[in-house]
Image (cartoon, rainbow, N blue to C red; front, side, top):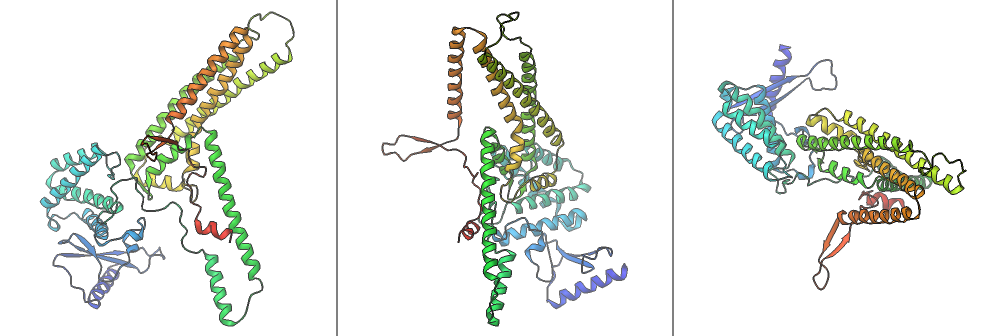
Length: 478
């Protein structure tokens, strides 16, 4: 191991000399030896240089941006000041691992960190779309800890918080002219397919080869037709699934749309804020708990309803029921049993969701969860459908139970009971429809000539604003 370390040190010195690189006055060389049982790590060692004057790390040879750990950031948004934040993050991570007081100015670093934490605290307290990864209580705790931290432990504490701060600023494109000031603002698109796939490249290479050799492949027209047919089937399948998702959303009372919007807001550009995601999970879990309780009450009400004898006016009468009465009784019992099934389904799915999301997750675990549940074309819509099932089943349980009660009221009483029940039911249905219309998403347009407001209902797009790719869609019909 010592010989390997000396050889790696020698190679690093040679690299600095060959590139005629002038080292700063206060710099450190860090060498990492890779395990021998991992053949994928080649060469056998790596290095970096830490500049304590400029608080950054560097290498003696040119380095690509991908090697800086910036794979989660859109490459088109890089800027010099932006990339310096990633180098600063890695420098403070180095100081965190080797917290020597002589390497940094403790007083200056402490003041800078307090300024940034104070700014973050005010930003979180005054903005619901703050890009801060910490909550108000966490910022306040960090400020208090820095004030009472022992001097011998302050270097590590400052290095840890400053490294996290630099990483947070890098992810939000600080140092770039278009820095992200709103955590819901995205620099990326959900589906993009700007580059040709492997089949296109292979076909282009085959065309160039055949053109240069002066030959023509006889199977090329058939391959081209097969490829067009394949792309067309893929596009039609995506449209069909998107249409079915939209129909499912309507059958689930448009609840998946709200869950999908909330999920997309906490997973912007594949960046997850732990506090925001945990708040979403807590609110959703509370909704599931409330839905489970209401479903239990409705389940009990259905059991009591099915125990009522029929006909209720004279349970001892032996006259046979007419066909209308028999059909009405069957419809009433069926509606009540359907309400019971929906209640049980709502309770079961609510308990499964609560158990799944009961424990708190770290930022990495939350990001991994959302990434595994994300579809390339449909996004988080399948997950949103699953999250909305408890509420939707409860609503269907309420509707079917209401239908059963209405049928019972119509058949159990006289003409006056039927008239009053139908009139009251029509009035309630009217107010429900009016409430749905009033609280639906609306857009205000000022396009009328007299300046009056023009309200236009905005219903969720049938394809949920999914981008199937203009190029792919165009190729399927060309």
